[in-house]
Length: 345
Ligand SMILES: NC(=O)c1ccc[n+]([C@@H]2O[C@H](COP(=O)([O-])OP(=O)(O)OC[C@H]3O[C@@H](n4cnc5c(N)ncnc54)[C@H](O)[C@@H]3O)[C@@H](O)[C@H]2O)c1
Image: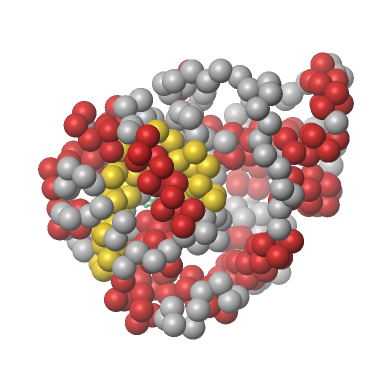
């Protein structure tokens, strides 16, 4: 796919333009209704690119001039999508705005264009015009997508499987990690797991079992150490599945109820300690600027990714035994509290 239109140039849109540019797409149009967002986008892409170059994750030829030649700022949506092969929708997570954007895309895009929505939790398929359903899917990224390689690909009820394969192949070819879901679920996989972790972490904090540093130490040095190599289910294989089966029936652990709030979190936010952007959250960052902290995080994450690439994976094929039958359609009913997922990115 050569011509890409990205609709929405906010937190995700500008970064997705960069991802597609680094992935080899040579004609990217970045569109937004906000002139401010369009003005800000090139600087944000340049800063990210500088960090990637510095970490060796982008070559020295990937400079600002290269970027300007590949990503074009196009304020008009119809012009942006006119002959695009792939249209990435990354506008506000608001059903009415998304519906209007899909309608405008429908008016101007070629019949063959693939529409890929970056929605986090909305079932966008009812918002997409009927004649576009076959060539529409969800391709959901994590922020920042030039660092986090996971992309969830989910078909709608009428999506042509060829469209899913095309998106999977496109992103795999960019060295990203597409995960194809059989159907849309709000929050996909990673955000659902993260939401479950958050429930437990805030309960431990609110119940006074441990403080932030102890909880993070348990995550970093115990839980998370094995995860990049094994995931969760291969780890279960190593532990032994009889043990996992036993744990499922162990009633000494009960999952925490969904409270929808946390005393510790509420107190921090009320004090204005909202995290890195405020210089303090669960941790105090000693007056360092958010840009400086994010740069350090990004460079270290890139080093970690490089180390994991060098280490490689444990080779194994997914086992065919014990596979459940998966039914089609989306499953909004699995998630009555939809905005729960919105906040778990
Ligand atoms: N921020 C994240 O971490 C994240 C991660 C994964 C997915 N998402 C999803 O990506 C999408 C975009 O999120 P974001 O965080 O980039 O939001 P954002 O608020 O940073 O940016 C959204 C952009 O959409 C633009 N926009 C609004 N209406 C428009 C229209 N009619 N035409 C063109 N542009 C329009 C806005 O001006 C804004 O610049 C949402 O669906 C969100 O759920 C966000």
